[in-house]
View 1 (cartoon, helix red, strand yellow):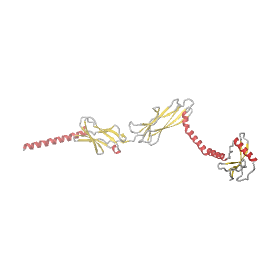
View 2: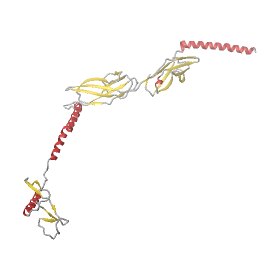
View 3: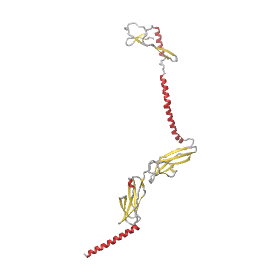
View 4: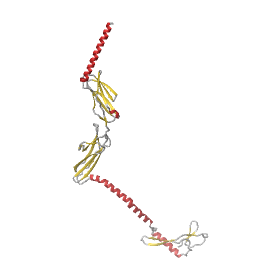
Length: 345
């Protein structure tokens, strides 16, 4: 029994000394050997859907440390390391995943937390649009460049390029307005290409406009001047079409209608004139027939010599007569129904 009591007394004394030593060691580590860990990432600016890596490290390279990563109060993972940082890979898909994050370093019963770390979510810029205004003189060309990206988180930095060489410093815009850059050049003999770059706080992410080529002005030709005059020429063409549609065309239709209303000659040929003349001559020799129906029509015709002649058209009269054996004057003839027909003046 005494031996059992001695053992309990020994273990109680040993545990008390061990606990005191651990407390002393933890206090010593807190003040000297175990400072707070460091939480960091290669970038703190990300866009939605981007994968990131977070590094939790400690200055003490000789201790076996357990690292834990938290977002708010949510535990995300734990790793053990000695002399090297713990790496946590994440994907930022929503706004609430931007942080804050904390790293916990623990050795036995001693633990410390890092400072908060948060990401900034930025929308990437879209491809900008480059517009160029030119004032051409005999010797110089005054150029104004405008560059604008309609999407992307502000501020946006714009840079202008000529033949792939930067010709302007970065122009920062904190509002959704185009960046402007002016330059004056002597009339070049070769074509020049311009474009602009747009980028915001997203690292290693930039977009470029479509290049715009400025033609040369060598010699007496001025192709770029023609491009500048093209809108004016198109406007002039539209005005001419409107004038033709609303002024000239109605007059043309009116004149055409007047010509259609003028009586035309019957276009009788010289042969027809001769036939009508023979008929009139025969009828003049024959006895007259009582007048029935309307008066004869009188018209004029022109022969090939352009001489006007008066033509009279006889109106046929149909009369019921006796059978065919009866004698009729030679001026009568029978139709297909055996009825005599007389032609008279």
